[in-house]
Length: 343
Image 1: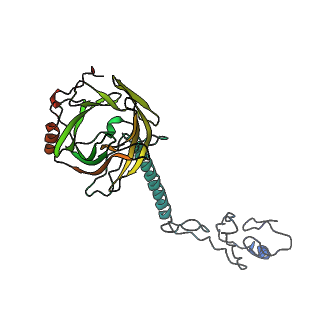
Image 2: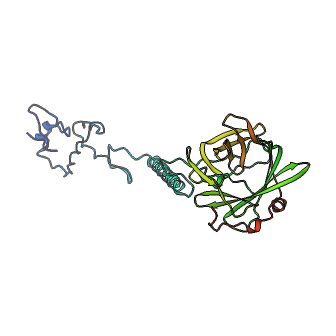
């Protein structure tokens, strides 16, 4: 059987309809009366038990109430209305993630530019060693990066005044001063210097000129400008050797150490180069210490032997005064050249 009002299925013996609450026993009494036409409501769609509220049963003889019509702007009955500002946290999180990603990308791009800039070491390679200015000197500034394998790195700088104490086996002993300046108007002649000593109460000076060639640096004595001998070779490595021969015999130089920290008592010099000089003409060996930007700073009979020449002080001179000092003891400075005919 079906309910005459809503069409719902009736179970035999039930008086009231389980869907709309209609009293089936009144059907016979009311069938002879004219009943105004009523609109039959469609049953509500079944929803999830968690949001669907059960409809109350109507008492006998009462029409069921129409479902609640939600106001404009709200969802259907049983749905949860949106919470104000619910999307704002999501937008903030998304923006924060984008900012972090953009910052990481910018950092990576800048770091790659730093690697590819001139002077930066490529991946997997170590940068060239750098030198340090002598410690404990007032007003000293950090030295620029130097290539410790290049011979010209160990030439003295312009306007440098160094004081030494020498004690050679040939009897020469006492203080000595050395001044460096650029006086030769030839590009290959990198720098000139003069060494001054006291002899019988008088000052005596000797001039030297250093020439840079493709394979290294060479020395020209001002008194004999036609002669040229090697000082240091390029691509310096431990064990590297070169020689020079004359009518008096042969001299052999060998690199015995590099990057040495030398403590002279009044100052410390870093990245020093140690070269053994074997003068076979006179049967005498010595170890020469070269400091970047300062030239020879120490000479010893051996690595742990007696001092032959030792730096005791250094300072900077006015450029004009340095030039005049070197010119005074270098009468042939204008004739110094490098025409590659010198041996």
